[in-house]
Length: 410
Image 1 (cartoon, rainbow, N blue to C red):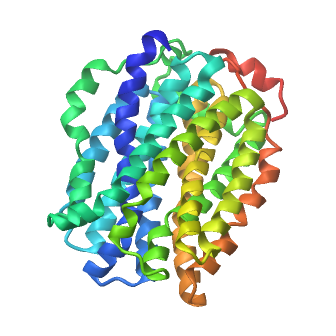
Image 2 (spheres, rainbow, N blue to C red; image 1 turned 30 degrees about the vertical axis):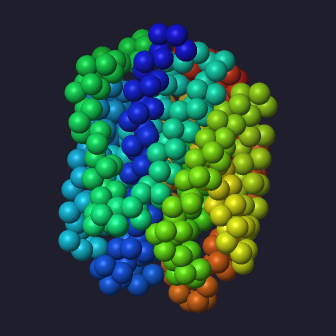
């Protein structure tokens, strides 16, 4: 990576805490459910509503195509850290949900603008591996809180202590102000003489033109499916284990010992597989694995298999890295952030918001969380035709992607 090593380290550190903070809302649901007196259906709605805030990230990420990657990244980093700190003092479920609604919006903007920065600054031949390694750091951050809840309970901080830790990027923010620079691809783009408003309108029109519309629709539906799976199988794990299996915070202490190695391996491997074999085969392998691992986790009756299932699910979250990289490669520089924001945030994240709501209601109706999650996991199989309908983009040069993309089936 050469001169970009420092940039990579800084982005990884910021995204470690993004992963840490993103996991907190779902991790603490059973605990705050008891503290605030909320049933499973209400917790599902709280998760769904707070997660829907990610969709608003679309309007923020649009600015990355106009004012630049750097200012949007810095604003999102500061916002998610500040809102995480505020969540530590939430007095009830309504305030908790409202704070997390906006915090999760900022988190997703930070994450995807960081992906943009890396994808535009790193050599094309290693882009997948770099993004896979980068995403593994977010997975590492998300795995850490599981082991901290019980110790924090023991010292009287409980779930609020997790949110205090998650706000640490506030202390590092001056470092990011001084070190993060704008990407070369953004600086070299062709700008409209009519200003930012004209640029956005031109980008939106181009995205919905005959050249790009079909590709945009298909990748957006793929994101809806992946997000829906994540919002059920991953977000509902602690609700399932605490409610159906009788686990408590001490049982969660074992999770980082498996989630960290499996998560790192799964995300790093996602980059290697997509660089070597392509985006289509990599996405297919991970989606098939996601279906099988969901069944293992939620249909097993012994704790060992449940642990193995969640470890595998965590590593298979690497499908996010694959489809994020792929989405950015499917569109030219001047509309890349807009396309990613539209496909994954504004529309795609509706799947992530709907997942917990549907799972919570179905679990209550059927009186069985494992039955509900197992049935909903079929969405990963339904996504496979979408995967094979998109053009392969392995190793394209993002500085000159227009010719390549125009030569492919839209």
